[in-house]
Amino acid sequence: MNSKVAITQYQQLDLEARLASANPHKLVSLLFQRAAVRLAAAEAGIIRGDISVRTNEINGVIEILSALRSALDLDAGGELAANLRDLYDYMDSQLLEANRRSSQAHISEVKGLLGELQQAWDSMPQVDGVS
Image (cartoon, rainbow, N blue to C red; front, side, top):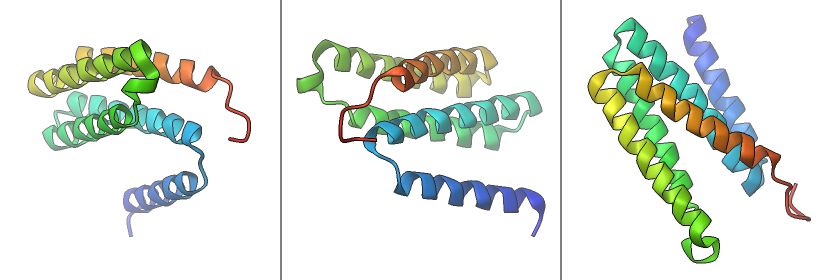
């Protein structure tokens, strides 16, 4: 087994272990983290001219955004949830454009937006009884 395959398998097992023991707050944080990793990989794919990697990683981030969007409670979350939905939609469009144009600038914009969301999310106090 080559080292790249072994590292990928380890990362997958590590992610599965963290997901199995995570509460909802931590799950969202893990999604943000995974999106950041995939965006970095997409950027590397663009630099190397590797269309397959670029496309796969961008599609993975779009799937993460879809999961984040589906977790929104638009009734209870009101304007904030609607704004997040719209932001996730915007990031989707930027990622599609990044893939179409092989654009690091579009990837960088999404990385910045997700980084800000993750920082805000991680700074939120957790609800009692949820750790």
